[in-house]
Amino acid sequence: MNDILAAASALKNGKLVAFPTETVYGLGADAQSQEAVSRIYLAKGRPADHPLIVHIPTKEQMTDWAIEIPEFANALANAFWPGPMTLILQRSEFAKDFVTGGQDSVGLRVPNHFAALELLAEFAKLGGRGIAAPSANRFGKVSPTTAQAVKDELGNYLGSEDVILDGGFAEVGIESTIIDCTGEAPKILRPGSITIEMIEKTTGLELDQAVSSLRVSGSLENHYSPNAKVVLDQPPVAGDGFIAMSNVETPVGVVRLAAPATEGEYAQFLYKCLREADEKSLSRVVAWQPTGSGIAIAIRDRLQRASNAS
Ligand code: TXA
Ligand code: MG
Image 1 (tube, protein in one colour):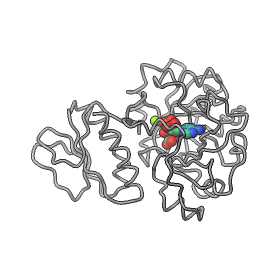
Image 2: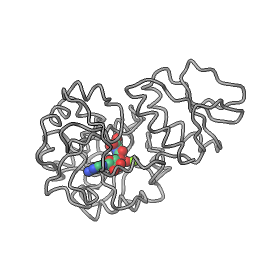
Image 3: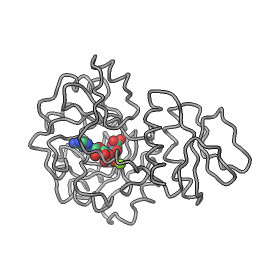
Image 4: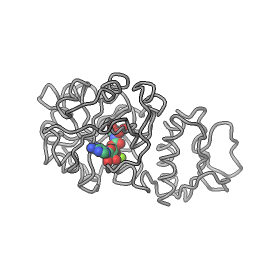
């Protein structure tokens, strides 16, 4: 708890705070401070025109940052916040260009992790209105799911007064579902564990399948990549790292990185495995993609991007 109070005050003083969420770790700054937010871009090595998600303590703060919120967006917020979902809404005057990448929309999320929620609540007591935070990795690399992974990624790029909060292993393991709510119907910009079925059931609307013109860095084709080459759905050979569901046996000489029993477990361990492959200096990781709908769609999305880079 003392850690969280100190982290909230570091944020208020313009420092960076890496914090756990249920999806992946974020690298946070005061969303109202241009100077603090600019340090996120430096630490990540991320182009300045990529928008950041503003994390808020409860859904009531939506109206600080967004205007003309459609009914279906309220329904989604009621159903899935706190949770692994980011809503893209028309921005208010609060959401400056340095957070939105100059776009007229803003991404908002209430994360579902007690340390993140405590941090947001303590920051609010100090007058903070939101924490801008991308995933706490270098640009284009694999998102961290542990505090140690954040240290490994960003340790050299953080200052002595910046903070890394340790909240254990991220439960979901892949980034939030991003839903564009600026049109007539919700549109998925990045799949995640809040699925098409869940969104359609909650809103009573059919998803807009048109390709969005909004910029989402996660949708660059080669994102989320480790140093190892990621190869999909091929037979692994000796010396390869291997990720496949638990009913698949491990061929002799192959380094089994994960044998998830469920697709949820697959998501949870995916980034940890990709990091482990690099720690073990493996040159290839063979991943057998899960075949289902739901969260399997998000897993295949991340795997395909990781494999495009290699
Ligand atoms: O689960 C998550 O969403 C994690 C945790 C830390 O909350 N955050 C995360 O942030 O994945 P980041 O920056 O790595 O990915 C957020 C994506 C980016 O690709 C960004 O382009 C997109 O959200 N985004 C943010 N604001 C947007 C906006 N106004 N319009 C379109 N895309 C937006
Ligand atoms: Mg990211």
